[in-house]
Length: 399
Image 1: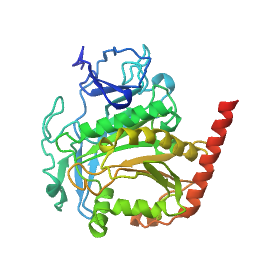
Image 2: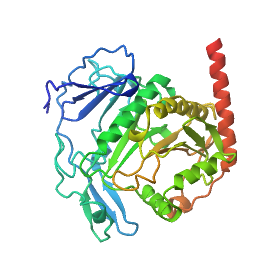
Image 3: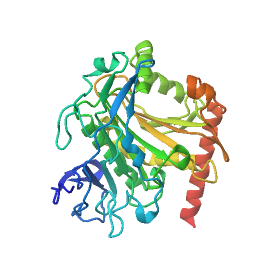
Image 4: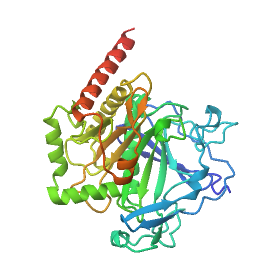
């Protein structure tokens, strides 16, 4: 059902010369174009003229009374597209033969996921998002234990397209494009944090079929949860025991160790003292910021080349691209803002050129980890890989 024949295109100027253009898709989902500074694209954007079915009903959550975790049951996600060819890429710009999700050519595009785990319903009606019939009634409601407890999976899931190209990843983008994506992360974090019922916002990139990626298109996602995630809840418990400056304590300890991968003016990359994965590296700002929305322009400017430097090293470890999960941990929306610090945790299950680490028995069932690579060895390998990548890049530029 095409409900928006001619949606209004609003324009906002962001930092670093990035221009944001807001519109809607044919079924009412929001679409945001983020134009690079000095983009060659024009100001106009095509209308999404597809005839789309109504959006699926919002999923439900069920409480695991043994752990207190909420499990979303989203059957609509079974129908997702799996590894399409370039001419059927749903994240590419629309063409006469490919009725994809993005109507126009773009630099960076962000839109609401068509098959979300959370949403489109919210705790309160807003725009085209309906109010949920059984939304969580705050964190106390979510913390209560009981058999058979359910709630509506309010929230929002967005897709972040890093490029119109069919293949690639964040690490294959230019510094300018990386900076545009970072600006989009900051802008969307601020906006999503204001939605009714949202408790935490999580930008991430899954890279590689070994991770479970279903689309080769260079893209990431942003999940907006109706609860504080289990991982962050555990961190908050440690903060309560160690102090609100725990992340500063960690940063200073790591900066004094041999696990530092590199250090910039505003960011430090390091392999953590108790790394779980064969490849695990964290990237943390030097001052406390709760999320991307709180980062300064200078911090975002430095992050773009530093993050690309890190990803180049990750890919230089082996002869083929490294699968990874790049998880940007941010503070919850309503609690822990003065203690949880924005940081990247990049992990890969690849433990050798032809070997993967699979979670079984002890790790998957009991959450009891055993690492095969020492963090100090892991840091040395990444430093060496970054040096190789920089040397190769310099030779190519001088050729």
